[in-house]
Image (cartoon, rainbow, N blue to C red; front, top):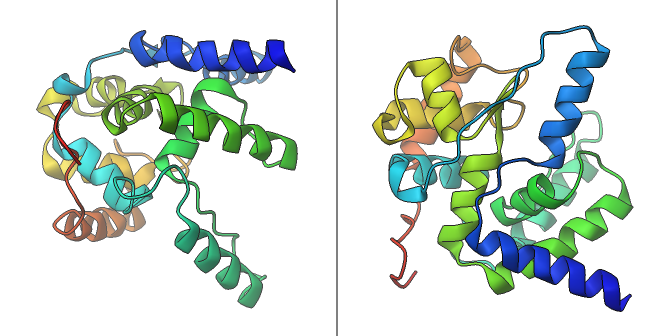
Length: 221
């Protein structure tokens, strides 16, 4: 137990300062590509938060976690709302309530899945990154490690692959479109958006007007 606590805490502290160049999800997706006989693809370019469009954090907050700057890793209001909706409408697709902090913990330290064991580890690592990382660092790691397409990870990779620009050059509209794909980036494409994606993009653009903007490093929330 002592070894587990020490190793996990040290790994979280380590990634507070060091870029995350490879995640378990990336390795698992590569293995799946090989198993399915597909061409191996892993497009990932780490860039500092300052070299990502300021609209990208706003877009993912509007899309994924409106209270990101206010909670400490878990949005209990969203959890209750999702549970109530799932109870009332069991025939519909289950809603989740994972925050950006939880998704970051999962992407960097864990594996995809829905088991209670993995959720338990996710909660543990979420507490650790909220304790040792700033909100800016959580967002930086999230925007560099999140899956944004088939074999595409992070804002700079999707900007180059889908729009032919760098992450810093993404427009407000493009940021909203990328954020619109995040519930299932392997199914929905920001390069060839469907009518449903464009509808989500419009909704996110509207919500971006009302969410709190991510402060610069060193600034108060």
